[in-house]
Length: 199
Image (cartoon, rainbow, N blue to C red):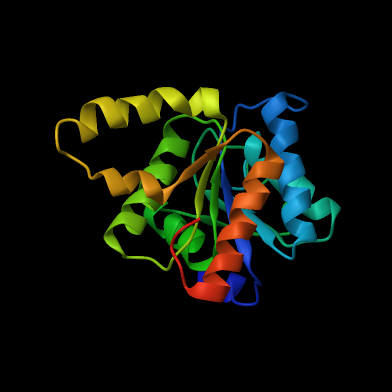
């Protein structure tokens, strides 16, 4: 069903982040701005289709006429697709939802979020680390928010020998929508020119 629904999509960026982010807050506005800027670069936006960061990014994409995609999940406490989704579907299982994110995305941009966002982030990092996915950039937005997680990975996971130093090259951390856009475009420009994984 997902392949049939999205088989005409052009290049897209998946945006992850908290459904609890309030309209008008700093990160809502940054995610909306990111959707606008990526739409202007010719990319659609794929989100989980819910409120908060997801609605913000879809809002930005829709405002500039870009693909605004929602891949929802059937949950008793979710309200369904946000009103800015122009093409969407709901999945019964989380794993099929992740397949849709991966298949149709050329980048993953992660705004501040909770457990669901962390699940999506570490799924993308694991696929990138193990080579089970095409090359794509992973960008975390919000240096202060993500710094504690990165410190823990470096001070405990890396120091105990449970990950490699080069794993930190799988992602970049920025503070603004503009910087996130620049990282995504920088990666794709380099990949087209040199087939490089560095960004």
